[in-house]
Length: 518
Image (cartoon, rainbow, N blue to C red):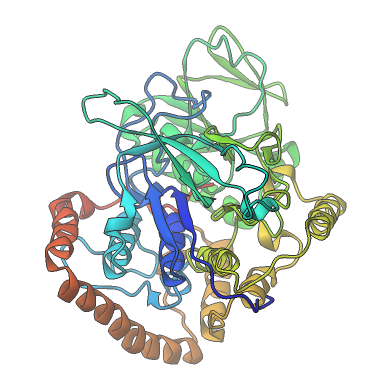
């Protein structure tokens, strides 16, 4: 990170999305004195963690873009990472008392939502977020006259943002257009399904859906269900369905994986007689049969594709400077997965990276962008950034990293998640006991993915770290909320009234222990 000798600059910034990454961006931009407006199409903040029981009934596969229902979270989701490793650097994800709160180390979805609501309240972001506001188009504004002294390079590009108010009755008023100095895309990457190409999908007469449209197991009671994909969502949904479905046919990634599954999957299959592991699907036939590549088949009622998600920014028009590849797995070119070289610093992305500690990593991304916009940090020249992007592409290709993991930060170097944060920000380093806790969770999940969240085998160093963490981080959390109450008590009370109103729904026990998205 390079410091600038120039006086700090304050920008007018539009952030698209008020989920985890969008809220991180809003807070960091305000800290640097930028005027920030967050546009969120839904009626509350939280992004994916704002659970929506609705599904895209007319498009359960999510083939159209953009999808109508943003959230892909199903009712029984639980985190895959311990809460102690999540959280903002100065607002840790500590357990809190109260109706409907979930104090477990690996809490359910509603606890994450409540945490984000607390963050939203504690840092006074209410007046920065426009709810029920859908962004229709983000494009470069017409350039100023040539004799305008402010006319310069890509950093001087202005952005025209067209948005519309989402009305409860379905009506939409006229669109509004505003000009911003910079735009930050923080709309998430777990909404638009990535679908396989299987012969017969277009004509198969029975029910097909993507996990994006799965919420609870009850609609599949008594059915023969084929679950395509053995990622986290596929395993979660298959496990949950085996309690209600007649049969669950779980489709492996390859014939080899079907013949010799990893130990954790073998153990799961041994515990659930109702789940049968199958090789990849060959085709779907018009009589309702799902045919597998080994020549076997099953007459199925439903096929659920747990095949991940693709990046999609249908509102973004950069005249080709930034694009999503054909497979939907790579946004590019992006320097350090954040800045498009040709349009930095006025356009950036927060939340694209995968397999990171969230929201800690998003906080670092947002902090870096805020510093760059303020002139307190400098980016390399465009050509140098492009070389770095191309080197990353080549390294991933040589390492055999799948295309859909183009933004999985640790795919090349496990330490890059941490090095990114330390390279671009002054955020405190993650404590060693947290890393030990995280690694222990991974090891336990490899042994038994259904019980690892509730295993209590902490080492002495982890227990000591936890004791300090609960005391210091807990006091910090409460102090931040108390400060918010004193400055704006009415808004704060309203925020928690929303959470308390849903307490009964939050207390419903999940039918099985499940994890985060693909």
